[in-house]
Length: 160
Image 1 (cartoon, helix red, strand yellow):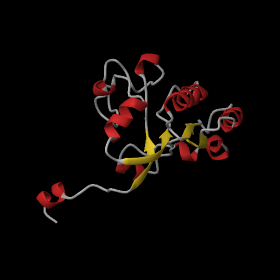
Image 2: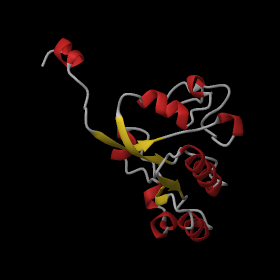
Image 3: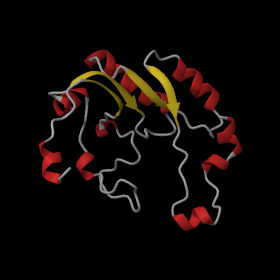
Image 4: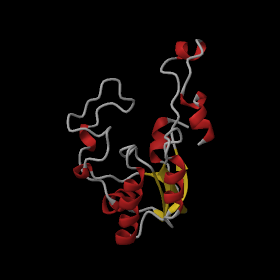
């Protein structure tokens, strides 16, 4: 298919469950990666300056207008690791106020000593269906070849 034909192809017209989306409000200052400076050296997503504005359910709905979105799943957005339950409270409040998201993948830092308490607290929120802790990986292919250990090698992470 040519680039032109692909550009003219109709989008999916059926119902959609958006299984991974984010919302945030940098005014609450709870996202270490979302800094006013907008540039963290070596940050994997580049310049965050364009993201330094609230992106809430009404913004999501505007962006998704014209699509038959039936349900959404919020994916944790690297909220302050010292307060993973704060993100769940924030998102749960949005769900009550706006009717979305309909489910949530919450944050839990599996190598933290309080992981059991955090998991129990996350399980108490009706919106939460699972948790995620991105384990990271070697920064470069050479680091992988050299056998650089990652968080997945941490016994606390593996027990979490």
